[in-house]
Length: 639
Image (cartoon, rainbow, N blue to C red; front, top):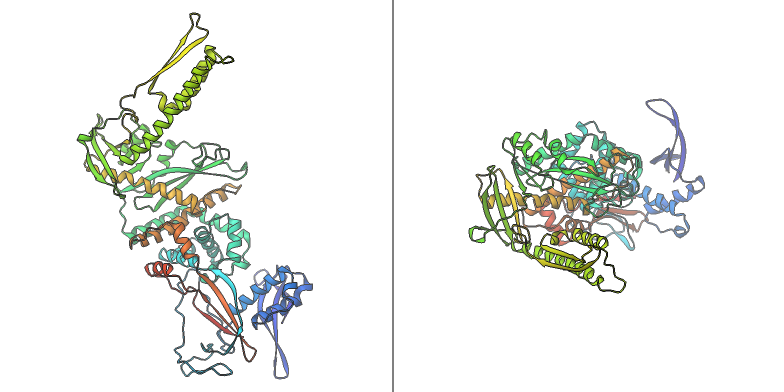
């Protein structure tokens, strides 16, 4: 075995170029026949002085031999040797002389069932056993091997990847990407981006390393990620973002068909994420209020419109300082919602102008009312049970515009509100006591302007509590020195402190009962859980890119990953499994695909590549999701 440097020509342009090939020499009668085992490409960058050592090490790995020089070989030589040996084993037919190349599955094509010969146990012999039922060219399942020679090599993760591909196949993602003009390599890179975000959320650069060195995704879709250029991964991100409208429509349409979804409720909200670096060249990277307390960094805003089931209908990207109310019209226009559709959104977006626009467009809405005056009478309230078996009290009132005002009381929220109010009141009173104490200290100030300034800061800091206090500042006859500070607490009628645990919903759905209105609004928590999943489970934050299209492509990949994650979770929820994606990912990620190498008595080597057996919890998930317990099937090779 040796490496040959060969000059050839491009079939299309006719331009000459140099390529490298791993060649094997065998004697055929009186002649020497040379066979190319692998084309190493024109960019094979190993120094020529290491070529003989690399060829020897590949030969040793194929024959299951251990090298005495292994520890002294450069790391790059060892890495190349393991990679090339694995590729030869994967591509080699099931047995010498079969005359056929191994089957390579198309990207995202469902793997064909493994053809396992139906052999009866035979007594061990010095050579391979045979059976009349075994087809010509197949490696017999029964071999006599040296157990001390057994090695487990090339372990790669396969569990999450297999589940992710099963979700993608349900949406015919490959066909859609091909329809949009992507070629096979681009489709593989696009799938790699999305699956990596589901399995190992990270930057595109880290995704590139994961696909090359850790994941068995390439085996499942028949693509060699080790040969892929990093720029192809970035360009796949660009292609996904370019076709975002078509992909969103396709995925949501398929989800509606698969799960029988209606089109009556749209959940809408915004979140933002931060950049690592100054992001000076990114037009939408602006300073604003970070929902992750990272206002020290530039931000970008993600707006999402979801179906009530939690599937994404549309996403759009805005500057980090975007005003929430200004985004609604642009997001909902063109959604093709059914007449009388309902929009559920948070108070920050529900301005009077937006609500008027919704009414003009024929939408209904359920929003949190911004009315500061609250009224709640437990005696007039009805009760409903939440999913957590918590009792919610509901009181219905009609306002002058014909809206339903639904006052909702939660005991858990009351406990939280009281704790916050107590903390804020204690903070304000401590600040007032400190100001009072400065009036009698030897070096304390009594200057009116200074005291009033400090008092204003305290009221601003504890604004939630300050509205309930009457604070009096007494001065001397000249009005220049403060002599005393006194305060009295009086709860403001109709305020949150007067009705702890109460919030008010405002809706145009006057014909629906209280329980239905409340449950419609609670759907908004699904949107909040989506944002949490995007940020914590699917790599939405932080953003490292410094180019506009790459920034939005990075965010869009997380949205696509969420769609397939949500599909898997809905299918599991239907069978009573409500685990988070992080928990599911940890369960699935234990499964590996590994090659077992053993030497026979005659010096030949048997290589068997297959997936490890799923653990019981994994088996349960696999049965629900209809996953093959041996993803990638079993590949047996005799060399």
